[in-house]
Image (cartoon, rainbow, N blue to C red; front, side, top):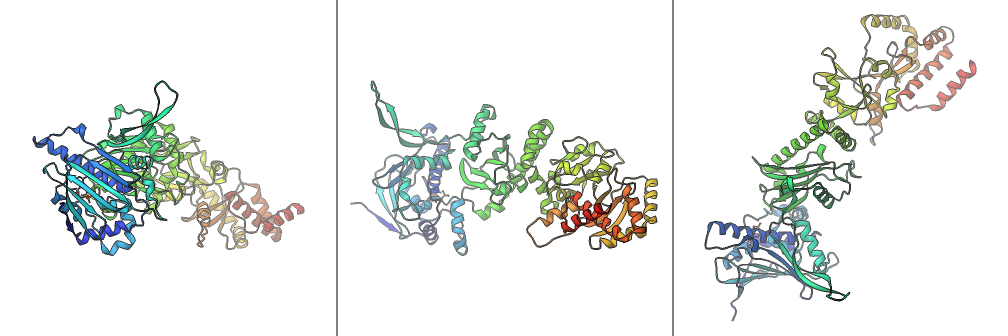
Length: 629
Ligand code: ADP
């Protein structure tokens, strides 16, 4: 007669069990990852024991994990020939949440967190109950002659009974739940499904995960095919990132990338390294050659795959990447993170922080290296992700600018191509204190601006064409002791003292007329003045203070109610014929003078690409003027 012992679960275990059984979480397939990881641990333990204890004889090549399924009985079996468990261990390990594996389950967080906990982290043996209504564990410890069967159908408790299992190891049998509207458990009972789950989560477990599969072959001396069964190893066992760099071909790197990250264009760059020190990890990182379609949207999720000891514990660990390097894809494998780490613990984990920091500097150095030694590649990278770097500078109040300012580029008026700030500054003389820039929609449009024409012969001007650029520049503020100067700012003045004196005098001499113009443009401009900045062009609009007209455009295009207005100054080329005309009209025809003033202002706005509030008025004014001529 079989002696069966009935037992109750400890209270805490009951709660976890309850959570698993009633889980609404859809990603139930992770139970297999958990059970395979447990098997792998048991194999590890046995192997290490054998190294120190000569009574335990283990050949590493004999160690395995096996997964089977039985459609008729609706069971999935996971077996291993690892340490196994004694009756006492079965009670202690599966009857209570083991300390090591305990997820510090907080009653108060239960409602909002259960989905997350299950999704992201190792939840251990009990995850079997997400898919099973009964679980049987048959185990024989390497240190005991007797074997035991542990069985449980849920929170009511479990039973222990003797078994006649001869070899050490553990066989876990899951009796699958009936299908429901929410989940098709039967689907798990297929070679295709199980193989897929194993490949996805446990491909890099270092022991073979064996499964009996069906194959086809041609019958001997016949054209007919027959199916036959064979046991094969499903997982690839050695992760690419753990292999020696020298032995990996570019194709292998690229295939891994497209398999894992579903990007069928080759990556731009691969970083494969191993760090040993305060924290230990292997990394295989990729810089894509183009931005994913959703990259600059809220939908894009950054993060690296996080493995511990070859077991995937998180698909997109966002803590490992700063936002400005969110384009990096790849894998981190570390032994310094426990498999069952909780989401909260992960955020604060010292080792995760160390790894993140180290990844950040690796990526930065790689980019600097590309910039220096492989400019074409860097330009390709910059085309795809330069905007993100500039956002990185602008975000968090410029906190990260030191890390990123050497990586950004702008079009140069002199070189007619993208250059870095360092390259700009290197060409400056000691006494040159400014980095000139101008923002606009396109290189061509900026190039045509009157203010730019006046300056670009004397100084290199950086053309800022992304809407974030000016904000990034303002966050940097100063680079290597040089200050950024917007050429469309009213105060930007390159003239000599003599020239200054001359233009000041002309402004004083025409003070009344200019005041009158300002009155006509009441509410629009802060000042109207004559200028020597403009080579051939008659007018331009400059601004005073922080906000430029291009910033005004960017901010006002945002979907908020807060609109801003730059402080505009209308500047008129002192040596242009139009000034004589204005002087004449001011004296002899005030009506016409008013019309001309308005048209000139509208023109200046058009040049800047600013909207015209009343285009009809502009059209009427111009026709009036033309008709009167
Ligand atoms: P964790 O694995 O995180 O410790 P689990 O709840 O998954 O938590 O497992 C509890 C314990 O049960 C393990 O620590 C291990 O001692 C034991 N165990 C589970 N599965 C096996 C197995 N296949 N072989 C031997 N021991 C096992």
